Length: 345
Image (cartoon, rainbow, N blue to C red; front, side, top):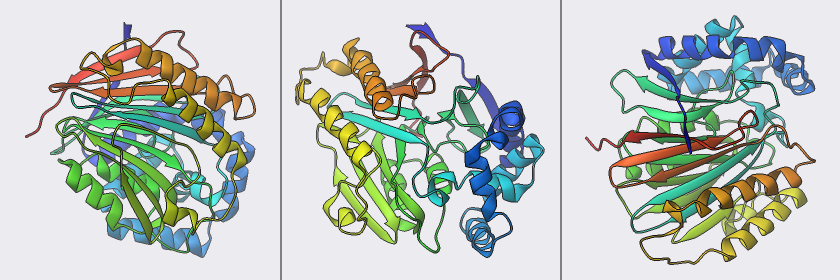
């Protein structure tokens, strides 16, 4: 496996955002703003709903509003338009972003595999970034241009592993964007703090979160929609896509997502081939983990209208002292990996 070298960013929220915006400027101006998706989103520009969402975000998470302000400056774009871009999953109802998550909870390690498609085949559409905010633990994430970091899959130096899937559902009338909540998770210092943060806030949209920790034999799946929340333990192996699977969320979200359900069934068939309780030389430490995750990528693509050129597959595995973050993007023929130490202080 080759070594991945993440983009290194550190400093204040505005400085971090500025660097992220500058990195994404070409992708944003040469590709994103010319898409039909961008045109649909800009119909919300200047609306009272966006004004209310911005006000809610500024009151709840002013630090991350500063970070997003830095991103907009780096992009050379208005803050409101960049904010709307961060609402893409919520405002579009059925987002073009398709994601799938596999998770394994083992006694010696936790592994989370995440496949994201619908980000486009533009080179630089997604990058691996290591971000060190002043006074915070720091984290590694797959960064999508123009968005707050952390709203895909990420792992922090405090040992928190987090993956997010949007759930296809019309948004609530108020609440905090999932992207802001996901970003805040990466500044937490314990799994309990991260879980409480996700469970505390009313979500403007609907989302699924997988949360695990390098230091605890604990992993959870959380589904949120508006003020509705559901949490279940991940005892061994788990799969999720873009529709609710928890009983009490399924009763709230009534739409029938045939494509997402088909992907989930295929993923579950993949998991059935993996022992529920392997010995300590388990799948998390063998090449079969990457093979299963590559199958996940193929499953997601085949169920997503053939978007074979724009799927990014990521695998995060925790150990007692280190976290291994591996990525296979459209531009790479092999897995790239970056390993960094866990600091529990």
